[in-house]
Amino acid sequence: MKAAWYERNGAAHDVLIVGDLPTPEPSRGEVLVRLNVSGVNPSDVKSRAGRPLAGPLVVPHSDGAGIIEKAGAGVPVARIGERVWLWNGQWQRPMGTAAEFIALPAAQAVRLPQGVDFAVGACLGIPGLTAMHAVNLHGPLAGKTLLVTGAASAVAHYATQIAVARGARVIGTASAARSRHALAAGADAVIDYKTENVAERVLDLTHGKGADGVIDMDFSSTGALLSAGILAPHGKLVGYGSNQRGTNPLPFTDSLFRSLTLQFFLVYELRAEDRAAAIADLNAMLASGSLRHSIGARFPLADIAAAHETVEAGRIIGNTVIEL
Image (cartoon, rainbow, N blue to C red; front, side):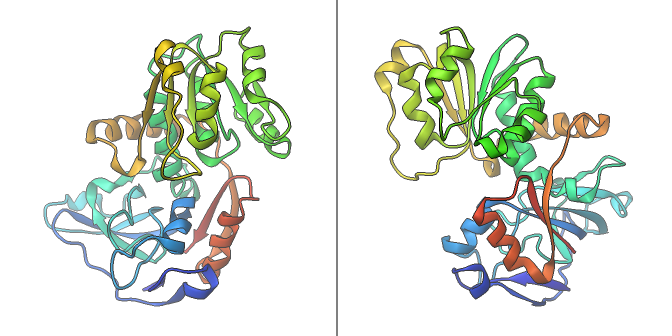
């Protein structure tokens, strides 16, 4: 099968190889999926650049979509021919979705509703599930105000739509160049974090109360705003990322006296019941056509290095995918 892989960490053009690898066979409980599209996420390029390899070589990318071609022992043969989207394709294993085929546990291949494009399916495992779980953690949202940071990012674009569909008012943060994208997702207002005081604007937009909840992509920046009152008393921040790893400052006293809740999660490690709920909610919105999608760049497998560089540069609005 055609595939892309790397055997050491480094820059995309230096380490990514495109060639032929043996086509895998599904083991018991697995399916073999012929991939149509592979999704490229920031975590994929970070892994290639500097995280320890899961084997002698790594076929990157955890997200993808395609058609089940074979069913391993214990998997109903009726699943053969099913259109599916994938999650955790390359999580803690060396063989990801940047290839014509992938064998993985059957539960990680989720039926893709009819009429939903494979390119969209390749954006669900990380961006879609992160967004859905982040919104789910906030509980009922009717009449509440959420602050969504990085509102033009892939995750936040979905989170904004989901939250608005559940009755929330969303305030987003984004650069001026990306504000239109955030507004198109349903944000009520967008704060230009590069030129405006985010905390002051949140307080202005909430009549001094602060947001009822926050969905946050960068706690290294947002954590410092908690003391400035961006969260109302008894509010909740749900975080899924931080640009600064290691120690982040936590305003304990302010959080304590305002009875704030801080909750963080890694989408790769969701509890089974939480993932099942997020998948069901996501597929229901896909089936009803109530989610808008944004594919910012498409590349052939031969140009995987350029795809990784596009994600690293962060200049494209929308998801980056590789068509196989």
